[in-house]
Image 1 (tube, one colour):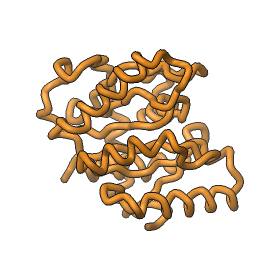
Image 2 (tube, rainbow, N blue to C red; image 1 turned 90 degrees about the vertical axis):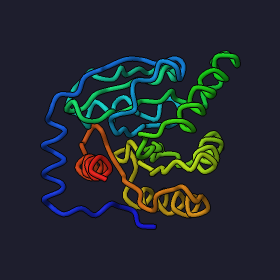
Image 3 (cartoon, one colour; image 1 turned 60 degrees about the vertical axis):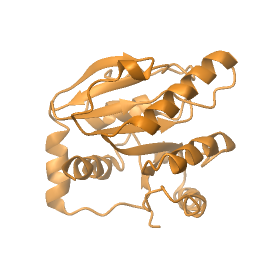
Image 4 (cartoon, rainbow, N blue to C red; image 1 turned 45 degrees about the vertical axis):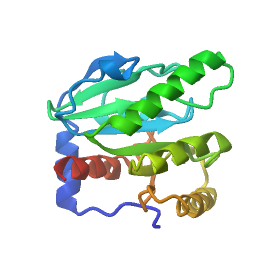
Length: 214
């Protein structure tokens, strides 16, 4: 595994152009029956509650309030669909690992995520967001195993990288690489990002563009 994604300047430029196009909220889905048609390619964003998914999505598309942000973990309780350039979906999955939510509610979110991962033919990849300050936690492991068994390709994206010193960030990347090397569905490159400083966003946009073109 390597710690970053390598793209040529043409791909990076094309990705930046793509993400300057309109991106709009389509719908929030509470069960698989409500999923939109799978005619368009899509990528999904998963991660522990309060990992920074909404902030990263907003930074990716250059909008301040496309995805709702909150200091309260577990606010995203639906599978939220956003349409990018009328040609692809960005999908925000409910955060997991928030123990204070009611068990029945957590079970419902988890079932929705499982059904989505196992049955979505248009899903190109899941970007698994990991807080760079903490790395992988026990609460991430069931999701890793679910994606392995569902044969869903997923890629680690470190969030809040600006809040970690360079040496500490390298250590987190190394530990994450070591753990993900045990998982067959894990894509072998990690992208370290900061929504606040835009670090890693060009590479993440380019990764998404490449997936849409496959």
